Image (cartoon, rainbow, N blue to C red):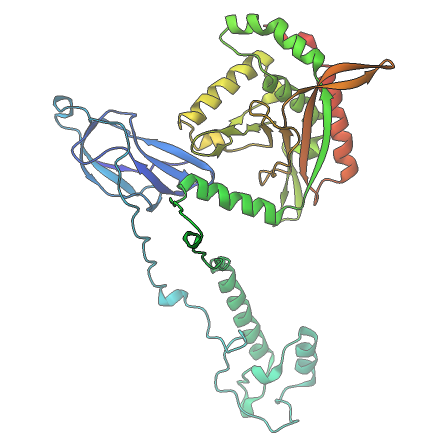
Length: 433
């Protein structure tokens, strides 16, 4: 049987092969990962739909493949009698040469164009200087209103006279040319001139991973298309930390770890319900604002392979206990590269918590097509004025980056003030197990 690339989810029909975990002759089990496929920001494992012996592998690392394409051939006969593969590690193979694109079919060729990009002239008569092409006054007026040079329009009536049909034909050819241009792939920016760093001392070099290349492209896209502004503040989480210590044992007894991230998730859900604009996206094509009625929060996870953002769904409907379990499960899946493409899709807002590493305020980049992201730093004991006295309080650095096309500074300031208030007055009843 042929094993084909399965449906990858809504709106996803292709990807690039990153690693192949099997080789010809291996016996594999149903559900065993056969390769990793990179799409958007996810590197997703592709499992085998059946058990059997591999008789041929049809793809290579670096290949771009589409849904329905054959990945490998599998013999299901006498599979149980063969030994399992000796190693689950991916075979070390060199990335393949990129496939050459097939020449376009003649039927889809664009209309001929001149040097200025307009439809090329076909048998256009030449006119003496100052003599306009023959056309009725109504045609001249229409061409003038449309900004069309009649000397570039071929007249089909006697003596090359231009009529309405000729003008319409010329406009249709302009439209075909414009449509063809929109289908052409965007030109990549010119690469910077390479620098020979070894002239100044010893260097080492290794290729960027597929995932790191995807992250780089996404960051450039978000930064270059979204006007970023970041609102900074800090929340007094002294009481929140006391609540965490108070309830930690009860959570551990239920197999969950109560962390600051669980509190922030719950607080963000409340914030997004109060300020739904933060839970929106811009539909550039329709010039519309799409506000989601659901709250799915992406959680940035630092892994050895790079930054991954799995999504916790329906955050506003879940208890702190369930959120704590979801954080553990998705973080583990991210670090062991077990995230599916669907685990990475559908987010409406993102949280990037660097508190476990260190540092204070930073400026996170909005995860397009979302319009806002919350950066959380490391809490620090700082001198704080309370009731006329200076006391030590645990302060949490917060940074809200947002898309200034949709969100104004005053709105962001109010939203940040509300988030601080939600964290500082967290309802202990929400922690019940």
